[in-house]
Image (cartoon, rainbow, N blue to C red; front, side, top):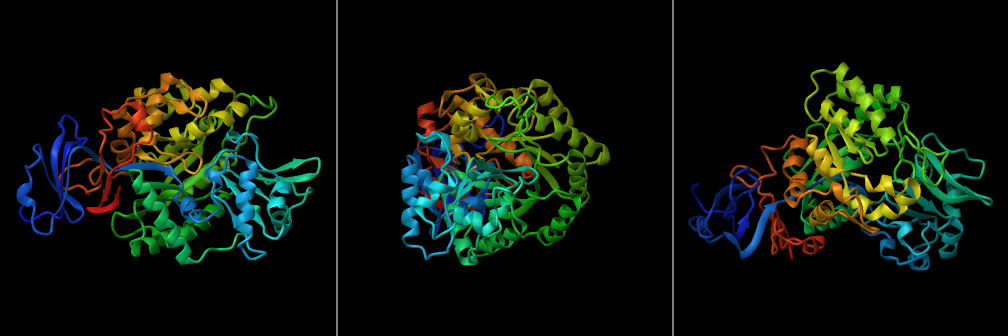
Length: 535
C-alpha cells in the first residue's frame, strides 16, 4: 500500500483493470496523474482518503480505462466548432436556410463555413446541393460547405474567387464536379486545396477555443486520446499553445499531413518543418508520424472491380506507387512513422507492395512504423499478407454506419457489407484498433463498441459475420491502441504506476444490452487524475 493521502479515490461495483486474468476490483486511488493503488473491496483504500481527497462513490457503476480514437480529425472538429451546424439539417432547404441565416449576420465578403459530419445520401434528396442552390442562400459571401474529409461544395462566389471555370482541368488525384452548365461546385480530394487555400485563417484564440470545445466533447463521450489523422504542420503550433494553456481536454497524437503533396522533395520540405516538433514535453501532446493518402474516399476508393454505378470507373490512386515509396522512404530515414489511407482493395494491395519494399530497405524497422489506415475492403489474401508483414490496421465502424447507403450506390451492397471485417482481422492475428474517422463517422466510445458488436448501419445490419464481442471491441480502443502507439507501459490498463485515465459508467458496458450500448455515455471521465467531464 502506498503512503500518504490520495487526490482521488473511486469506489465502484466493478473496476475493469483490463489486466488479463485479474478479476474486477472495487476501489482505485490516484495521486497526481498516476494510479497508486487498486483494491478488491469498496473500502479497501479508505486509509488513503484525506481531507483533500475527492471521492467518487458509485456502488453500481463500472470503471474502464479511457478509450482511444485511433483515427479521427480533431483539427476539423475544432475548426468547425463554431461553423454553421448543417449536420442538424433534415433536408437541403433546411441546410440552405441555416446558411442564409448565418449570411444575414455575417459582413459581406466574409467566408461562411459549415460543419462536415453529415451525409448527403441520408437527406431525402440523396444528393449534394449545387453551387446554384448555395447561391440562393447568399451571393454576397463565398460559401464552403464541407462533407467529411474528401468532399466540399462551394457557391459561385467561391469558384470565382479561386479562378475556377469550366475549362479548369481536374488536378491529379482530384475531381471538379461538372454538368451541362459548367462547374457544379463539388470539389473532391486533391481539388479541395484549389479553394481551401483562400479560407481566412482564424485567430489563434479562436482556434484554441474551438479545440477546447471539441476536446471537451470527445471526453464527454468517453474518449481520452485522439490520434488526429490529418494535422497540417502549421497547426502543430496551435495544438501546442492549446496544451500549454490547459485547453486540451484529451490527449493528442498528431499525424502530420502529407495530403496534397505529390513528390518526395515536397515531403522533404514538410519534414524540415516538422523537425521542431519531434520532442514535446509530457504525455498530453506528441507527433505520431506522417499521414499519406493513397486513394480517394467513399466516392473514389481504388478498387479491383468496377464501381456499381459506373462500370468504367475503378476509383483512383492519388500517388504513383514508385514516387510514394520514395517519399515514405525519406520519412522513415528521418525516424518518423508512416500511416497511409488505403480504402479500396486495389489501394490496399498497392500499399502492401509499397510497405513490403520499405521493409526490405529498412529491415530493422520497429513495430508499428508502418500502419494501414482503414483497410476498408480486403480479402483473406490481403489480410494474410498484412499480418505477415506486421502491418497494424486502424478500422472505423462508425464510418460504415453513416455511409452504408451512399456506399451501396458506388460499390454495391455485397462489397459494402464486407467493409471493416473486424472478426477476421482479429482471428487472423492482426494488431487492429478502433476509431471513428470523424467527421465521416460519429465519435464516441460506446457508439463504436455498439457498431462493432451489432454491425448496425443506417441501412440495417451489414455483414454480421464480421461482428466481434464487447470485450474485443473495448480492447481495440484500449489495450490494442496503446500497443499501436507504443504506450502500453503508460496507459490502457488500470494498474498502479500507469496514468490515471479512466471512465465511470452507470451501466456496465461489459454486460449492457446492445440497445443500452448505442447511446451510453460516461458519468465521469478522468484524464491524468483530473476530472475533465462529469455528467
